[in-house]
Amino acid sequence: MLEIVSVSVFYEVAALLVLATAVGLLGVLLRQPLIVSFIAVGILAGPSLLDVARSDEQINLLAELGIAVLLFLVGLKLDVKLVRTLGPVALTTGLGQVAFTSVIGFGLGLALGLDVVTSLYVAVALTFSSTIIIVKLLSDKREIDSLHGRVALGFLIVQDLVVVLAMLVMSAIGAGAQGDSAAAEIALVFAYGALMLLAVGLFIRFVAERLVERLARAPELLVCFAIGWAALLAAAGDYLGFSKELGGLLAGVSLASTRFREAMAARLAPLRDFLLLFFFIALGAGLDLSLLDEQIPAAIVFSLFVLIGNPLIVLVIMGAMGYRKRTGFLAGLTVAQISEFSLIFAAVGLSLGHIGAETLGLVTLVGLITISLSTYMITYSHHLYAWLEPFLRPFERRTTPREVVGDQGPARGGYDVLLFGLGRYGSAIARRLTQQGVSVLGVDFNPAVVKQWQTEGLDVAFGDGTDPELVASLPLAGVKWAVSAVPEHETGVTHEDARLGLIDALRAAGFAGRVAVTVHRVSDAGPLSDRGADLILQPFRDAADQAAQLILGEEHPSPLALVDSGE
Image (tube, rainbow, N blue to C red; front, top):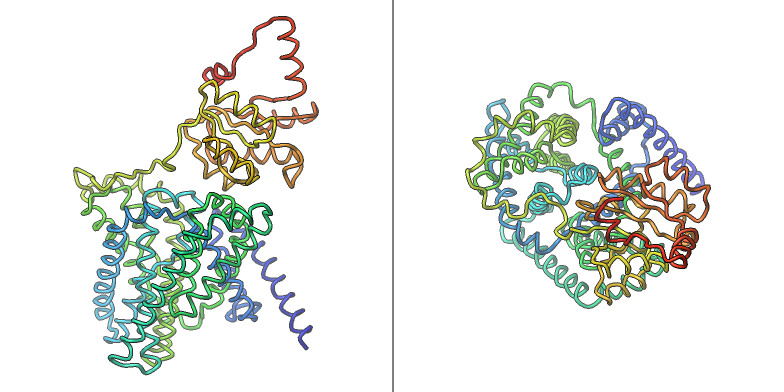
């Protein structure tokens, strides 16, 4: 019997993957974001249409694991100093947006003829924005580390805390807790949270760096540990009464101080994307189309408020705090949709008998409209800002004292050369350039090499140069040359494919400098030149040529002159 069930689930997952590929391809052809396509897959596969997605337990398990991995990656990139710097704006904007949205939403509900309790539920549901969807969109645009991305992440975390509090209150009401009993339950959860924060702090202080350094010697084991750690803390968070999301986020924060975080992030990115497919499928499959027809007029009103009103609220608050209108606008767009928690919140109200099925249908329809449209708004946010910029001047003060971080990207930079691969040949190039005053950032996937270079006081990043996300995270601005000196035996793909992948990743990340690649066979030079390599390095031939020049007493160009001249 178990085997029959397993085979049935396998067939179902296979069908979902094929359907997702087909719908996703159609979405790409129509220039639609994949998130919308995957939600559409859930609707198609759900009970209202094809009824393919029947294994709710298995799909939800994969979805929850995807959420844990996503929030783990978010936490992995959190800079504690930056969070402290952005704390006031995150708290002010997050709480301000929740307060204004709930009050205005409540008034809209009463104006549309909803009763007091229903209006209250709808108003609270409108305040939550989807951290998962926003982080995915900002990550795809490589804007998670921009100022507006960091501010948005800050107030989305504040929203998540409000969500946790709201769900705790609902759980207390559902359990029959009243007065002091409900307050005691909430206080207990916060106490558990404080203990978990203390445990994470001790882990960061005494364990994280040494443990991860040992695991990094086997990259596969490092990936296994990262997934397990994210799932463990997500499960702990859920068990202690707050959310899996916050647990996964703490797991990432606990490893954010290690020098191997970029490598973990790069390795987990494909798995994150695969698992999140099931989250969006589950979200779409949960939309009951039969509940939506009668709620269309009210849903349009509430959707317009969320799509337009919520960004305006954030824009006003951030403008009053001294942020530029561009930062406020781009951050404000991230709250132009409601969250999956909104649907859960409404479902809890339905189960408690506080609201009817039609109210759940209303919230569901608002979620479908706002998630779909806000995805486009965020994807094309810069085009939208350019169009609306003349109308946004009232939302910016003449002085912007809060714009101290800026949108410059990574704080460290100013390198002349990025050098991928610190083997014998790469190390020789790096040392020669450094000795002549050229600023070099080395990149290598060998933790022993990374540690050795750090001991010598040289700048080095731990990671796989064939991974596009790692390349995009490097400080590329102002770099004149990117050099690949990765030995053939140090990559899991063919050496030519690795070099081609690096060239593509550099160009996709907007690298404007020149690219040099190492080859050991003359036949490799042609494809690499065709792909965009500006300089082909052949160690044996170049060494022979230089030796001949030295023997004949001829001068040869210095690497410093080569970098400065760009030739």
